[in-house]
Image (cartoon, rainbow, N blue to C red; front, side, top):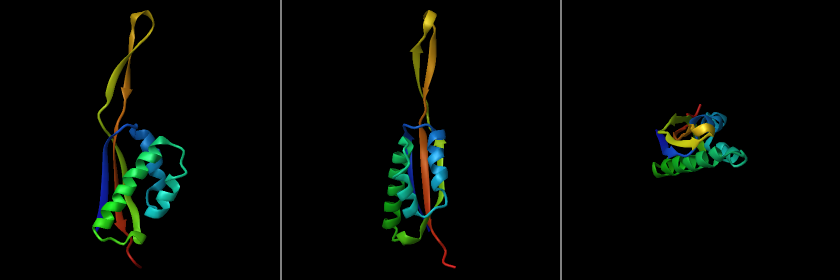
Length: 112
């Protein structure tokens, strides 16, 4: 049994979100929450919210919160907001404001 949470259109680039997700992949949910609190990145705050949502979903499914671990943590590309920035000599440069879709899947650890 697994619980998941998805945040779509997060205002952070997927590469920056993946840096944080790589740190917590495979860890227990409690340990991941503790680590996210001390990572000084904007994406860490966003991922922490998604992880809390996944934990709440797991609680609704009556899963054992102590045995949960992060099975899958993915940041996919969302749509880009495109803006134009004026430059010298009448030129313009495109700015790409990237968004991402963040998915976290939790699963109970098997007892061995």
